[in-house]
Length: 140
Image (cartoon, rainbow, N blue to C red; front, side, top):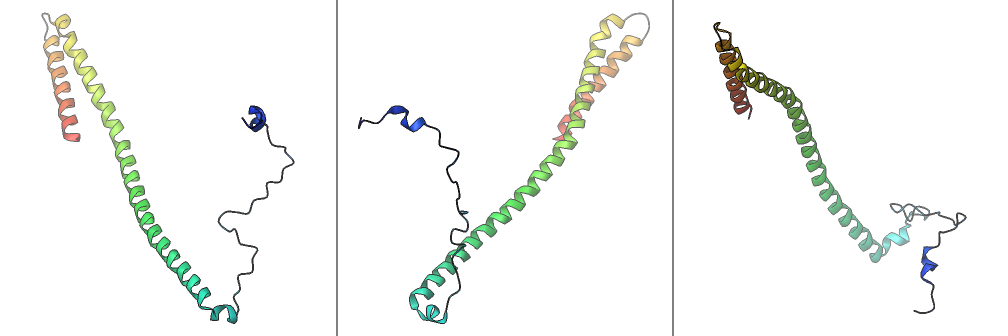
């Protein structure tokens, strides 16, 4: 294989290597951008400048669409976060009502005796379960 060692590419670079890289968004920042009257008189320069203006206007129009979409999405995210905040307490109350209602219905056979406590527990348990189910349906 061309006489190269497989581990040749696994060598770490030296720390002394210069990493001076010009920023990619301004690669020509050290060049003088002033155009003279002679430069502006050239039709090639004018065509290049007009081409650059068209590109920039196209980019601006595309970015304005993204800006609009960003703000719409941000508003939707905030709306959904607020909806989620209001949803959690309702969910906790629903779970509590179902749990207590099921507990009271489950205790009915052991409480059923001479007094009326068993019937009251059964009634309250059923009302809690039905009320929790109705609140869940109405919340959606």
